[in-house]
Amino acid sequence: MERLQKILARAGLASRREAERWIAEGRVTVNGAIVRLGSQADAAHDCIKVDGKRIKLPTSPRYFAFHKPPGIVSTLN
Image (cartoon, rainbow, N blue to C red):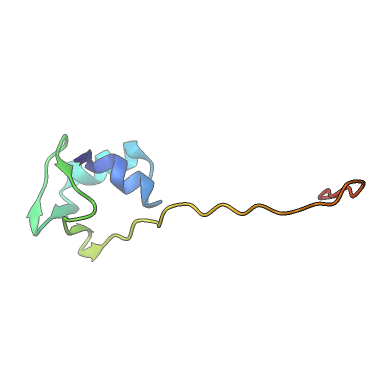
């Protein structure tokens, strides 16, 4: 279980403070019920919607390792 504002921020929809405003305005529902500030949800199992649209959480991060031979310099400039 995780606080709703944190889930919304992790989804990239808003900051935690902005998500708190959305919850207070009644724009956020969990499993069809309007939630109050301080509510918690399980993002993997609950249906979380903002303004009637279901949120999508990003997948786990992917890491890549590259081989750079000795003596090779790589920069952005």
